[in-house]
Length: 329
Image (cartoon, rainbow, N blue to C red; front, side, top):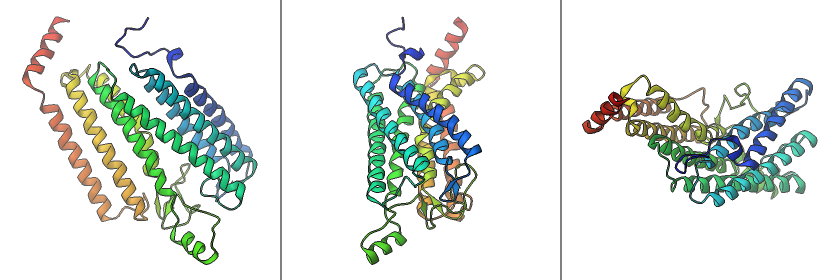
């Protein structure tokens, strides 16, 4: 039986609907790989199975991470179960519509207002995405009230969930009319497409392999992707620091590890802001200008200074305590 103060770690204790969602994403990923090999259809200048493949990998990892996060919830566990279930239901419905709209109908999913059915599907998918966003935000709030013994892990879970909420919110920036779409609306009183991933260029142009991020203009999918996967990155940083503590004495203190996690979280937030700023200016990720490079340099310098201070600012009495504990082993 698990100790009261420790997180449940057995797979049976994980949130079942989220685990089922992750399993479904694994199946879709395998089917999508076969589709990429056997189906030569394209949509918006990309293989028609590429979007299901990318989304299944991303959401599968996200669902498993969220299921694991919920094992750390003690206060409000029932509410956490419902938050996770609503997330799984919203995203599950979105993926059913994704397969129907893209693979079966051969039509674009996002921003499509061409016909009443296209508009209805687009609106339902947006509703599922907003449900997932709000449920992730609710889990992030729940984590603020949990007692997790390791301070570094506690900070990592909170920062990761909070930044994932920010990453999801970035997606809302895609749902505004582009100048070209606005011109069509003013001329015809309606438009067939509302919103876009790219900024300054049309969707479907030259892009990076697999991910498809634009190489000729801004792309809001980049900060969105980076943001939502803070949910995996920050806890991995905490675990990595814990492993390094076996070799480096200064990391034996969870206070130092917590400071480093917070520094990483702040830097990660800065990265999301920087990528969003770059995309909104219509600038490709592979062609940064002087101001973008200057911002990157400043962010790296700030992180280096903060990281150094985190390692050097441990109070002496905590160092002494760590030495006593080590000698008592």
